[in-house]
Image (tube, rainbow over all chains, first blue to last red; front, side):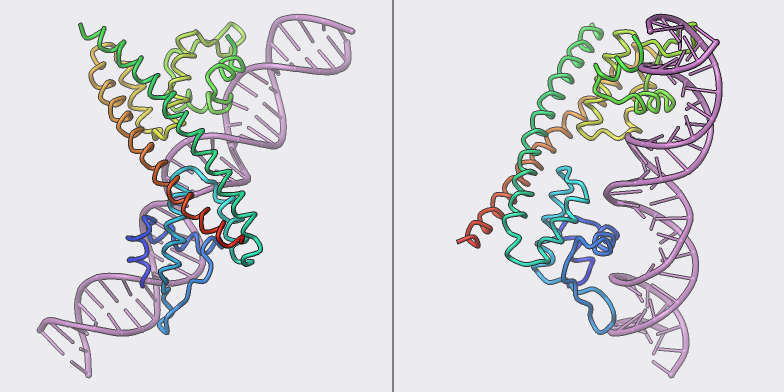
Length: 117
Length: 117
DNA sequence: TTCTTGACCTAGAGTTACTCAAGGCCGGTA
DNA sequence: TACCGGCCTTGAGTAACTCTAGGTCAAGAA
């Protein structure tokens, strides 16, 4: 499929996809005879994964490493697993941050209510 | 107190605090006779709020607006309340995102386990 | 067949939100 | 008096996009 559809399906925008590809984050993107990118379903799954990793705060350098490992084949699966497990721990930390922020907002809003009376 | 202590207490680093002040995000920062910044406990509370708002993804423009409203006095409390309530909704969305990402990671890790056997 | 439209392409500039570095001042201690 | 740490400003550097300009190409309308 074309880049616009890949964008719509993955959540990334077309510029970001091109940028990610240029930075080596997206392996195996083919080109049609017209020179335009063609994305396989596997490409789109990959982009979707990148979208969610980005959305939850993974730095590009880590994604870059993840993509490089992927390109090296199945023997890098343990390393890739480590990266995802690390990220999973980051998610837990972010959940705590959200709770912490919620508390602070609640306190602040309470004070505002007092002022409004 | 001095900037380094304000940084330690709020979570922001000193450069960020100076930057935020220059961008109008931190009202009422005094200077000592030596020309250095002096932060009151209220300043630090404010910085701590900014820290958590940033940590949970509030764009600077919104913080800027929030600070400007604050500087205009108590009659802007309803507007400030709206900003915080909006942000609160964003937190809920982010929590959903984390859940979504967790699922995707779990599925991916499962596939890796299969490969490792 | 020519014209137009729309999706795509690349290269490079612009933006956001920091973060770091250079060079200078100032108050306190050895 | 010489040094030191912490502060100051200004300006450059960085990350991760995001947008713009200028160009190609295929398909449908006139």
